[in-house]
Image 1: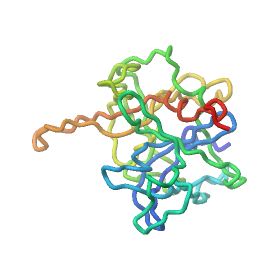
Image 2: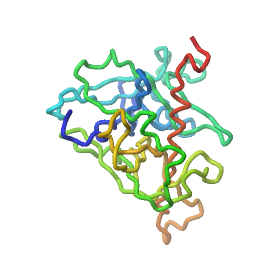
Image 3: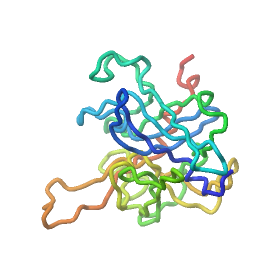
Image 4: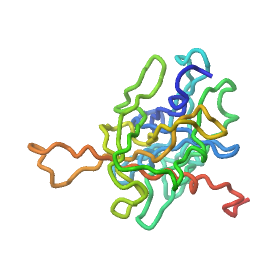
Length: 264
């Protein structure tokens, strides 16, 4: 495996597309559960009704050479099970979505899991993936103010030679384990930008799980969006600098094996 830190190989830069047109940039990361592989990102990356954002596919770049991370191949991920039927884009009301989303008592959760087909990827693909073992456990002490990182591609920025993400420092800004204002997320204090939505929010630990001891990061959440005050005087008051991170345990719901979900 490359000498690059494994966590950097778990992050994917996303370009949302409609037909042949690029719409926006975002961040996602790989999550493996048993033999299944998923791309995790924010729901508003794949569909945002309020903003009129309806892409029909995502494109990510996959590494194909252990020793040369400048070698990548574009990999297209369809978002719907049937080809869009009109030039205006996909019709979410009639076309089956190829992502999994979830809701709780507060409404729709801004996280989706998209099942990938490893057999469709290049044989030489190089990546790392978070797993259920890397999700922060309920009995793990995470105090307010604990240092975190948010990884991704703010404003689409990256090491363009090696196609690697960047990391932003963050801290836990609300009581971890509690649903902030009844929502399924906690707050982080970090400088973030558009394009990093869907990035993992992680905490460094001394050793990784038994299945991958070199992966020294626990997954606490999925970065969603910046949080601000609607009544802020933009001429006088700075932005809060706070962000919403949906608790990572939602991935265990989004990736329930089909047999356990009562499906064939």
